[in-house]
Length: 507
Image (cartoon, rainbow, N blue to C red; front, side, top):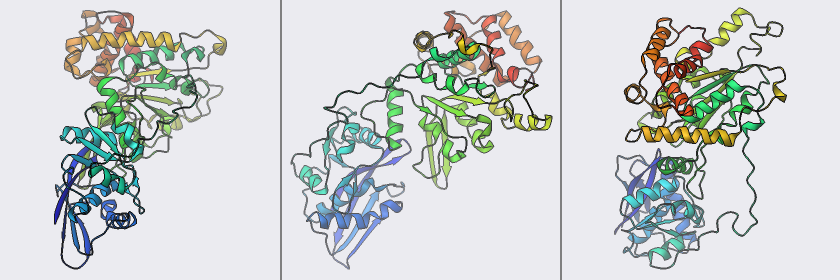
């Protein structure tokens, strides 16, 4: 006999529809799974057999063939177990087939028949709804996540027998209570505030500009000047996630195995250690592995001690910073992930950290040259802003430049100006505008054009650097409430370019 069930396999941030076909016929007892399944899928034979028998159901002593269609689509993970078991039970007459056409099944089976949750539930629920399926049957631990998709019924089945009951028309298992329900609310710790930062006014201004326009920023300075302290206050300046951005971030968290209880509104902040590999930073260690730059999508990727990162890892960031996505090809598997981030780096100016302070710096000219080469020109060219930080006499006791609340208001106002101006475009912040968008939305006056031309002639700015300087100038004008980009805005932007700050006018 032949039976069909519906399930999904996660491919990148998307879920692909899989039809499980099970055929049971006379012959030597065997259980074969075909259709390009990975090791976890092939091992489902033993999990399904044990789960069926330990649930008090019958496993047929006949020849069982399970096909995962389409056959040319690679399938990964144990989330197909539940669909395989239910298709087998339907093929042997232990389960009615009436509801199999409208129900999707997702979950890993334990040997005792319990249903374990699978990663990527939000992507699966979204794909099931788009495929016209009415109900998703899954473990209770992911019910809240699947319920974020409107119009899809979620049926909790904590065991194989519960799934059989649901497919027979019975009630599902009760959904688990949300974490913390019925308990006294615990106040969320306050975010670090810019009011804690004394002095370093230029760096604080650069941080606000980066937050307002979505620009990449490098903080350079000796140890103890507050680079890390300042960087960790970036999330307090950013507006909350909303709309499609929030859904994308929630989907990334779901695929990464961090099940959200609702649509995420807080922008991610990722800070990997400087020993991270290129695969750890970009992804691709295996098919379902997401790199740090993808996990930071629509948020901040903070690289502390930037010059200590492996050269190969930093160079791998060049494409994501330019295109806002990561394309990974491994053998016959290819995946594209969103990776639109604000890159925030912090570094010392030399190996000892005290370059420019003659009485303290002990580095030779050769050491300084080797250290400078750790950050390549193409990578620095993709940084919009560089702020140098210095040990300020009496800085720790001086007044703060601003607070996070006041800066966040300015950032929100600047982003609203960008949203209105860029309505109808594919981008919503200045830091993502391409050359044609810059010509339409950030035209320069004669003074600005002359300033940009002189900077190019003196090799202070590469062509890419010129575009990025205009983007930053547009953001500075937005923060000031100006409709047009003035020469003063452009001059301030050029003064914060890596070529002007770090390379001394060398491209």
